[in-house]
Amino acid sequence: MFYIFLLIVAALGVASYLIFFMSHVPGAKEERFGHLEPLPLDLGQWTAAAMPDEQGRIREQRHLFNEKTGFGAGRLVLQVRFRDAVTNAIVHVEDEQIVPRRRIRH
Image (cartoon, rainbow, N blue to C red; front, side, top):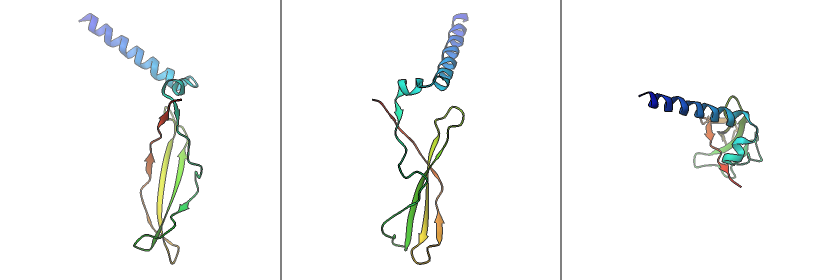
């Protein structure tokens, strides 16, 4: 029974070391897991679709990047809104979607 307790304490120690090592040592996460794919070039700019949809609305979208807070690497967020093709007024806004960024190994 004592050996099981000892193994649990050792596993917790190794896990906490790896978590702090990966989050505080610059370049350790990139070296082990790869670099994150690059951000979109039109970051923060609204881009419109070429043609209105069947309801006469023009779809516009933009990507925003929320900087790193805590252990994370920042979040890439997609925002979508629809404008009326005649009046150019915003008629509908969709909920923000978090876009997952993949890691690319070189």
